[in-house]
Length: 104
Image 1 (spheres, rainbow, N blue to C red):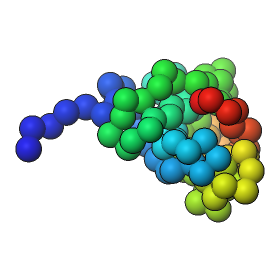
Image 2: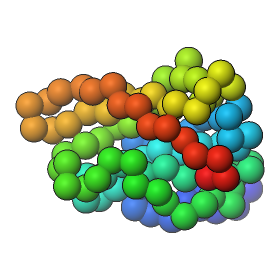
Image 3: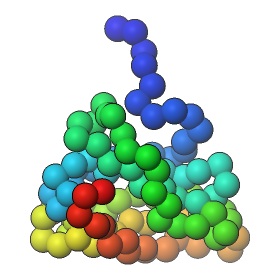
């Protein structure tokens, strides 16, 4: 099969899950500037929405956003999406909550 891009580069440390709350697939990834963005799509192969910044690039060194499968936004019990992310400075892992909005 011919290869085709699902999302244009550059992206790194991609995490994708289905959100019962949004009734869409949700993608998180790290940007080259150290921010974390979210995109949504009706199908896992796309077409993916424009990126929405969840963690500002001003918090440099953020990477590796991995969604927790028990997040209310994924299970349909609420709109909160929880994910782990790491930060280069001090090499810390953080639990981050983002409140998803209808229509994303």
